[in-house]
Image 1 (cartoon, helix red, strand yellow):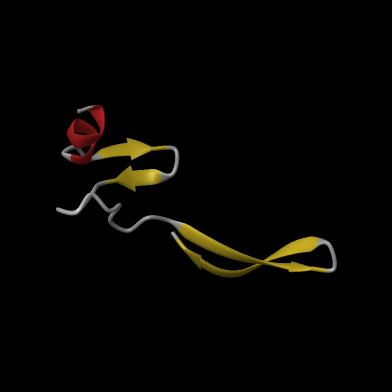
Image 2 (cartoon, one colour):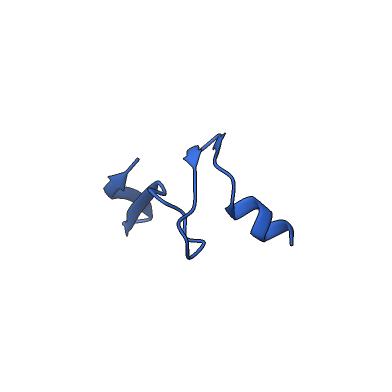
Length: 48
């Protein structure tokens, strides 16, 4: 019940705007892809 109510809302979070489509998937979710290289993480792609 709580999850359904949450999906029907849009709001601003510390990650930015949050809103969901009809399937409950996050629209325009921020994503960062890292590569572990020599023990260090390197950002290889980012979508804010």
